[in-house]
Image 1 (tube, rainbow, N blue to C red):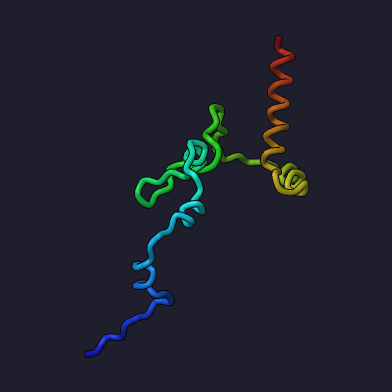
Image 2 (image 1 turned 90 degrees about the vertical axis):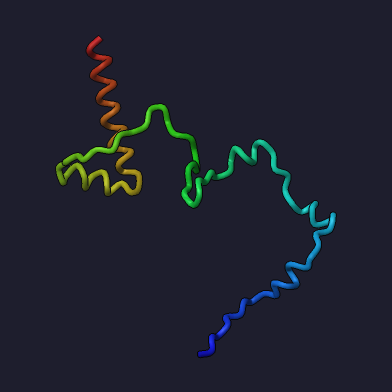
Amino acid sequence: MSEKKRTLGSDLQKIDAHVITPEEYEEIPELTEEWFQEADVYEGAKLIRRGRPPSDNAKKLVSLRLSPEVLDHFKATGPGWQTRINEVLLKSVRAKRAGAR
């Protein structure tokens, strides 16, 4: 039984034979401390860190039942409706705390 060999779209022997010149080194960005701070961190294939650092006051994921009227009102205002609900609730909490003093 004969096997078909799959061909790649590049000449790997030519790539392996290429010697990097000093001019090509100039194209490589310098790896600074800032670059490493911005880089993604992987452990094997798993992404460990990306984006902004975790908040000291992270929000909690909860399940909450809201009336259809409240939900429709906030969803009608577009993306970010959950954040706006949080802002209204936070405003209420702060007002009650200020009134209790």
